[in-house]
Structure formats: structure tokens, C-alpha cells
Length: 563
Ligand SMILES: *Cc1c(COP(=O)(O)O)cnc(C)c1O
Image (cartoon, rainbow, N blue to C red; front, side):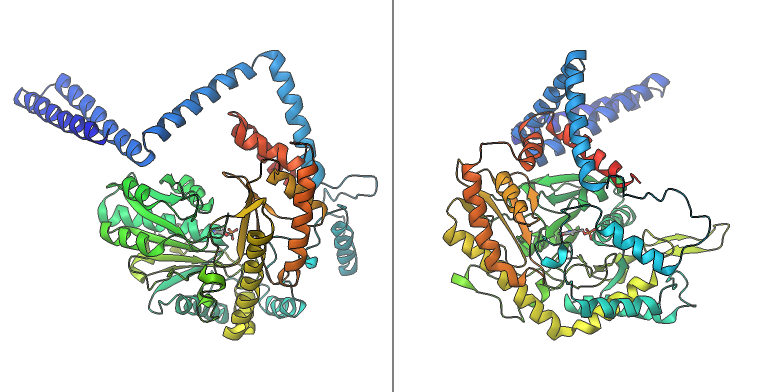
């Protein structure tokens, strides 16, 4: 296939070149300009299609096309009045279910839909918040630790440290550094501490509102860098399917084409052969995770870095989740482990070719939500993240990231959390959390034969799927929910994961016991009845699934704004 494509393409080139020569030999006319334009369009589209085909592979492209046509056909059928009514009824039920989980109902629920005539007292405000906290029965109690990720520290001592810092810098705004010198200094120091942690003290970085913004800013940086230094106007990036959705979001926002590359089903590392094949002259960026969100595994950062260096393109390592765990694995002497299964692999700026890293202070850094750090190999690259408008009517405008005004209180809270933890604090939390995760993974491997662990996750996340025909993993998820656990559901393959936090540390044995019971229960359950199962089934097994799940997801977003 590849050879045919190459010969066809060279024939095409010869053809285009000779046609162009003929046209140029003639006196220039409107007609010849039109012909020239025609061939230009045909040729560029041909090159685009060829690159797309190379990156996706033939069978995947054919499947993609088949799915699209089939989905289109089914959507047409569903427009038939009789079918339409049925689908609308089903969707309506689904949407109500989504809403019921989020929006409190009942005669006792007071809705605050307009401003009170006069201001309320501080006591009233706290009382009202207490009421709202308990308006949804059965909501997860995060302090009990049965929640995957979400709250990473949860200690009251840490809360006090953060609240005190908040209070002091409550009204500060880093957009005005002259007025708040301490906030400027703290932000610079947070970035400096992270750069040192990731072994690049002479690098450059910035704080953002979270991992998603760090990643979107990185995509923007490489887009503008590639345009400025290489003249690339149709940029593309290559991203493992296990990388965070923020990369797709960044691609959509910044108009960078995303090639999603499958991972090896056993190691869960991105398929390097496929990455290599997807690289073309428009590629601006390769992505690897250390660790990824779905199954907690780490891509081969060294090999990806080599590839990036060879092609002189960017290489971003997503350590949003790895944050303050990955850099402490080595000093915590958590290499080797049981049977040497967890070989520590390099992931930071010491790896040749790595040009940027995102690290979420608001995950295992235990800083307040709404903070993350994006780091670059040097300040030359960071320049392309900035937005500068020298001619704005409101004055010369310059800001490092998406936001204009920003909360200085979050920066102060982050600085305080990092000072409070210190190296020894993070080392201990790394040891405790990783030990908990590995003990769960080992227990699944050795004592729950119906399940298997995805890859060999080195840090704080473990994902598991079913290898038993009678055990539906979504049913296991439902059974775990009944035991108070809130785990994340994954797809392709269907699996569950738990991101261990400081709150889960004392619960590893409880988790394993509950999981054993949940598996037994799932074996006995009639197939496909659980709520998780139904949503899953929609997403993965039918052609229209994704668009219907998309509609439900939109209903979920709408519910968020239902007062
Ligand atoms: C959480 C996470 C992100 C995105 O972070 P947000 O802070 O939720 O925006 C990115 N990558 C990975 C691997 C993550 O786990």
C-alpha cells in the first residue's frame, strides 16, 4: 500500500509539474490560472489524504469511514416518526436520571433565584450552606476515603494552612504585581520549585488554573512556535489514546489536528511504530504521559523524546497526575518493588528531547483546586505562550496564560501547602500512596482471578478489567457503589480505576475485600441490568452510542446550571 501511494504521489508530482510547465509556457490567462489552482487544490488534498492514511492505517481508516456511514444511516432511520418517539422517550428518561442525581428536589428545598432584598448575615450564609450540603441523600462522603481521586489530601491541618493563606491574600490579583509583590514572588517560587523537582532549574514556566489549562497552553505554545520558526500553518500533534482529553480539547480550541495513537494492550504504553508513522512535516508535538489518567501507566518517554529530538519537534510529558508522586518515586526507593515489576523509567527534563511538562499542584501537591504548573525547557519556548497586545485602547496588555485577572489567594494557598509539606512530607505521602496502590494491584493479580490489572502502573492509579465471561466490570462498579466506593469507569476496554489518595491509604484491605464481594455479586447478577452497564453499553456497543452518550453528557452539563 505504502509503495503504491508513493509511486502514485510521484506520478502526481510529475504530472502536476509538467502541466504547470505547459501552462506557464503559454501566455498567462484566466483559464490557465484556474487550471493551476485546480491542480494545486487536488495536489494538496492528495498529500493531506495520504498523511491521514499513513497515520491512521488502512484498516482503521476504512473502519472509521464505515462507522460514519453506518451512523449516518441509522440516524436517518431514527428520524422516522415511530422510531423518533421511542428514542426521545428513552433519552428523556436518561436525562431525568442524570438530573435526579444532581439537582435536589422536594418541598424543603429553598431555591435562591434572585438577590435577597437586603444582605444576609454571615451566620445565615453558613447555615444555608450546611443545608445545601445535605440536600442530596447518598452523595459520596469524601472524608471516608472511598472516592477515587478528587480530594487528594483531605487533612484538617492542611485545610487550616491553606485557609490562613487564602485569608491573607483574599483580594490579591497577580495581574497587578506592583500592588501584590508577595504574590508575584510566591508564583515565581512555586514554578522554580517545580522546575527543580523535574530537574530543569534553568527552565521556565508559569502557573495556570489547572491541568487542562496547562495542556491547552502547551498546545498553543507549540502551535505558535511552529508557525514562527518553521512556517507550519496546518499543525498536527500525536497523542496516545490514553492521554488526557485535555489534549483533544486543546486541539479543538487551538485548531491543531490530533492523531490518536493506540497503546499496546499488555504494557499500555503508546505504540511507537504508529507514532513514527504518523509523523509528517506538519507535526509540531508528541505527547506522553507519566502517568496517564485511565490506567496509571507511563509511556516510553525516552523513546518519544528521541523521536522528537530527531524530528526537531516538541515533546510534552503530562505529569498532571504524576505531579508530586513521580519525582519522589526514586528518592522514596520505590523502584523494584514486588518481583521488580515496577521498573522506574525516566520521565523528566533529564530525558533528551523533552521540551515541556505539566504538573498539577492541585493533585498530589495537595494545593487548593485551581492550580497547576506548566514548565518549558527554556524561556525561548515559553515566549510563545504569552499574549501581548501593544496597541489596545485600554493600554499595553500582556498576560502569560488564558486568564486576565487571577486569584492571588490560590497562589498563596499553593505556596503555603508546598512549604508545609516539604520534601519529607511529599516523600512520606508518596511512599504511603504508592504502597497502597501496589498492594491493591497485587491483591487483584494474586487473589481475584476474574479480573486483570491493566499494564503495570508504577504510581498511584490502578485500573482493572474483567477476563471472565460471566463478570461484567460495569456490574462490579455498581456493586462497589453499593459499598460506598466511587470509582471511575473507563472504556476500550471497559474497566474501572481507583486513584489512591491520602484518604484511601488506610483502606487498601477494605477495598480488596469489597472488590472480592463485588465480583461475586456481579457473577450472580443478571447481565446488563446495572445503571453503569446501560450507559456503558450505549457508548461502546452501538453505532449511534457515542452521539447518544454525547447528548446525555450535554444533559449532564445542563443539569449543572439548573438552579
Ligand atoms: C487530571 C489530569 C489532567 C487535567 O487536569 P485538570 O486539573 O482536571 O484540568 C491532565 N492529565 C492527567 C493525566 C490528569 O490526570
